Amino acid sequence: MDRQKKFLLSERDIPRQWYNIQAHMPNAMHPPLHPGTLEPIGPADLAPLFPMELIKQEVSKEPWIDIPDEVRDAYKIWRPTPLYRAHAFEKLLDTPAHIYYKYEGNSPSGSHKPNTAIPQAYYNKQEGVKKISTETGAGQWGSALSFACQYFGLECEVFMVKISYNQKPYRKLLMNVWDATVHASPTDRTQAGRSILAQDPNSPGSLGIAISEAVEVAAMSQDTKYSLGSVLNHVLMHQSIIGLEAELQMEMAGEFPDVVIAPFGGGSNFAGIAFPFLRHKLNGSKNVRCLAIEPASCPKLTKGQFRYDFGDTVGMTPLIPMYTLGHNFLPAPIHAGGLRYHGAGAIVSQLLKDQLIEAVAVQQLECFKRGVEFAKAEGIVPAPEATHAIAGVVREALKAKEEGRQTTILFNLCGHGYFDMSAYQDYFAGKLVDHHFTDDELYANLKELNTPEIA
Image 1 (tube, helix red, strand yellow):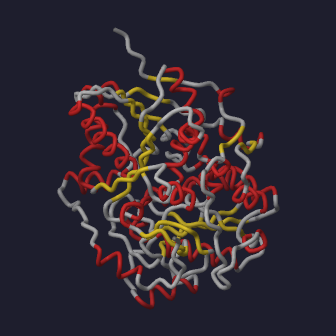
Image 2: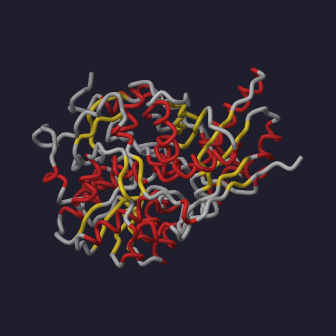
Image 3: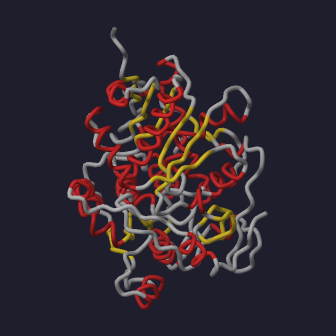
């Protein structure tokens, strides 16, 4: 029997609006707070960092936000992306589950990140900004923003977490291809970086530290703005284009997912695939489980506290209501650099608190094992971040097999691993180890917080 594997859309099917889940959440998020006054922040507080159109999107309660024609034209370079039925992987697992994956690895930078990099660069360009500063972990976000800035004629300065800068040199070179300036963070170029190096000259860096440096650069220059690749509301909304396309493709397949799965670092990947499906659960029309898979070495959703915390290490950003391990948390140097972030986005945090989504933490050896199995079956080498989703899929598929039931699983294969082969080299050489996060690690950071707790 011929079984369809690939479900393709045409350019006319690229969504014309992003989905904003804030309009349908049963409980509104707590407001971000000014780090100095602890009062709710307003647009004027964010204006030094972001263009006004993105600030409006950040606070919007409208369910649908129009995608500008210029952004949609840029999307056509790689969108719409394909949806695949993983028949070979199902056979390998000997599972009754139907497994589908949305593949975002065919974008210019090889991941889902350009979905928000393009609109962020566009809105900055429209407001006369000359340069954007940002951070990056594994380099997926930095390369995406470098591409977007080059596309719209903007300068781009990237602070890349030092451990990833050293582990993934080709990501740095890819940013150079698109004319970005890249630094290994922490640096001696900013006060934030110098303060970290004074404490630990051999600091491997973290996303929180890199954010501090990038924010400082933007705050010190009138023609420079800051851009973030995850966590913030407008970023999660831009990524909804993934799930909106997947909805159409699942209709082509004649199925609706029972569970939607994605890796979790700050929330953009997970939100992008899950939120368009979650809205059906919120309006009562369909039931779907949305499952975030995070690294066991950085388990903010499964072990963190729901409280106000800074998005960066030094404390320059607004206080965000989030599940957090503490902004001083320095995660183990696992290869999934894009997931090594101390906190979760405010929207995801509120949805988890309301028990509308689920979270699971997985060790990196299990992730790499499942990533290799997937590559053997489906022919795509996944990024280390994406292997977390695959590990979650395998758990769900084997559970379905054990219980003798059919289930439909959709996951976001958020990027390829062809610039991450050093990670696979370490895996095959037996150099990777699991990191067992302890309560002592958690409380060592959280006890230092003097930020408000949330009931």
